[in-house]
Image (cartoon, rainbow, N blue to C red; front, top):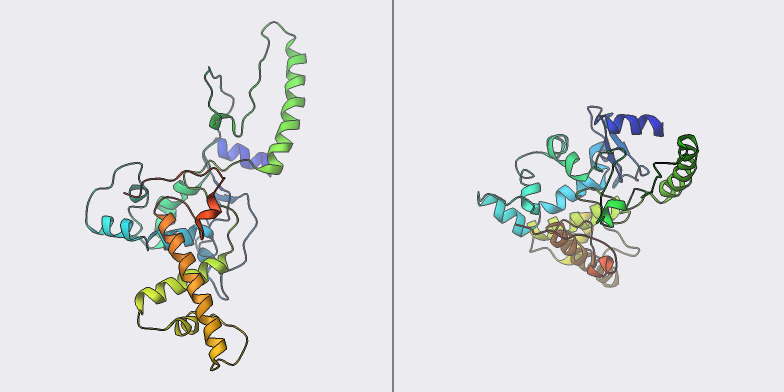
Length: 263
């Protein structure tokens, strides 16, 4: 299986993702996931809703800087988040995924063996092995040594999978149900600003133990919604910088992430 995937990937016939890609009604066998299938975000979720990439699409559409800029009709600059996600308001998710999204989230194509000259950046060696091969040595002995070296290092790399080199890598291993709840709270708060926090909890299907009419129960619902909304705002803000999902800025402290200009 691994050899077939590698062969097809080198021939540009598949897309490889670190997270599970959305499952469409129309089968897309070209989409291959390196991760495990996630639990559905809610009961009855469609296959295309069962992916972190779907929620990235939802949250980036809520970013006011991205939304206002694109709705203004201004032309986004290449290299910005607004440019890469410029059609999220013009297409439904399924159409956008097939024509745009897959290319933003997939891992780069394998390029085979390369001869490189110094200086060599650290990024260039993230999933590669730098070796020095003697021209005057015995060829068979050299090849045998290479096989042994590659086998040893490939096994170690497979176990770690290395750092994702997708243009927009997902941070960590998000729980879809958690993203769904925060998105629901954010949208209800935005669309129905007159609702109290515990009423938003009821509308979003957020439950806590206790009598629903009890003051303590309502207070605990309100506290949960307040936290979810705060976290959702962080997700929306950072989605505009090409980072997802960030529920707390401390989440990305000390890790290697690349923020991009929103517009």
